Image (cartoon, rainbow, N blue to C red; front, side, top):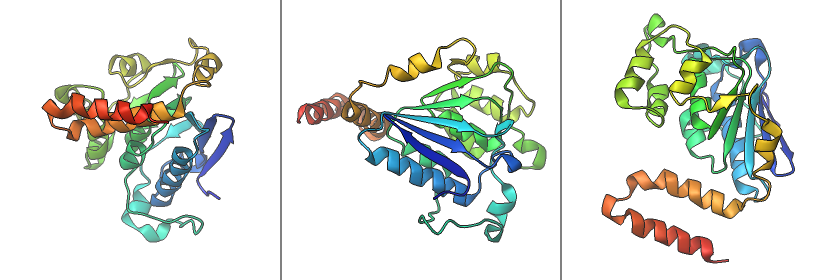
Length: 233
């Protein structure tokens, strides 16, 4: 069904693999739509409790394929899905299942939207991270919006202005990375989700995404309403 990704359901897990290694997994509009379609499949499947994201090749994701975004004719549409004008950041905001990015290659530019959109990021120690946009006269606008989810405004701006590679220790300090693949039993961590309530998880994530738009004095009332909805079987 997909041209640039692979998707597979394995029990309660949904494995999504970036599969454009010849282009360092740089994403095109079609690839963004394929990820969106796959996530909707995961959202609508009550058996799915966890989404895993991997990548083929030596680079996890090199960001946006600028040529295809500047000239959509260079992209190859996927007739099996509908194509919408949606950003990768929006795609991850609409995923209502916990997600784990398993990062074994470098993350560059818009690739940050993937790891910042995931609930957990576990990477190999040798992985490097970079936001090089300013070197070509651009700015990582969408990445900056995602960075504000995990760090203060000033720190997010500083990171966007810094165009050199930084290592996993710094990424962990920034709260971009949760841990290292060499130090975690990934199978055990994944299996901890096996018996968790899909309904509770989904409502919890929906509440988290809705909360910023709820008036401050109404927040606990809203949370009680969500809790009451969860209790209703």
